[in-house]
Image: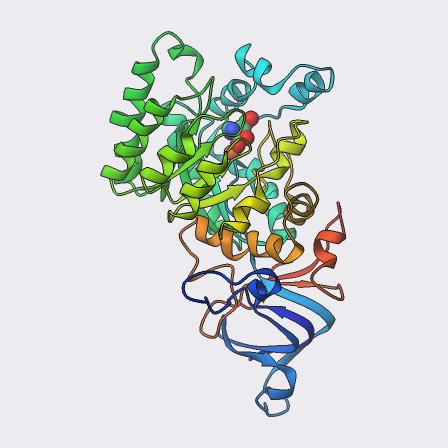
Length: 413
Ligand code: NIG
Ligand code: FE
């Protein structure tokens, strides 16, 4: 038995829904002041106010004093691209001198540069390069991490990326979720034959990925310069027919109708959303699709088009938040920084931002019953902060406020 005591605020992220809708404001957190948690065999066996804690015989438990700090559920990184070869520091340098991300992509750089480096990397090399990136996410609170393929764009290299995720899952403490992103870009050798590449993705890659159980989700980069609405729909429908769940990179750089298409297809999440409009927000509110905001990408690309977090939350859909950790558009593992950006640039409150990196992000991975919340019987995945109250998490900006991370009751950070 393990006891966490002297917790100033225990954020369970498990509010009782009022007539199906989420409560507003701080009630989202379902916080318990002056709390304690009892853990046995990787699970939470009790949580509540310290004053009501069941008596435990002396010596029967290991006690961790949280020094009047805050405890949250393990954080969820629901959108990352951490498997890749090489880096894009040279792109960053060019962007700093005025070239845009879109121009670099159109000139055959950007994602294609990472594709070249990833195709040239062995399975061992991909695993070795990704391991410290995942550990960096863990140090920033993540106990559940989604990782996409999409830098192979040919059968063997896409499978190698997914195989790397499988190997890493056995090496790291966090749980990993794999997403197949074969439709990330039309690779150089198919530039004159888009349909040929789509057939490769739909007829050759998807069936192998599904048959080998290498991915739970299929994602598409639906954007000018990547895949059109119609092309994206073809990939997503094929994925669904194979029993795979879907996600869409939607309206990151332009407004396109991708959100409406994804909602109509029952996608689990739509991600980025920098350019969605009021109609898209209404559609999202009426659907089961989870909006995912990636403000680190907006920041790192030097744009001002942050996703409309306030309008989404007002419509009853507090967006999930993640880093989008990748070599081109968001080279960071700093999940807490995303909560700051959500407050300063998306109009979310600290409470909503913290819900976004936990329970909402778990919903974006179809795990809202299992992750991103603290509940008796659930896994003891927790993050401890040496801070007096939860508002200090986004307020403590730019560094890493995480003090300790536990996965299944074991300290991992
Ligand atoms: O989420 N938008 C497409 N994919 C990534 C960027 C990938 C890259 O630039 O390497 C994103 O921003
Ligand atoms: Fe992405």
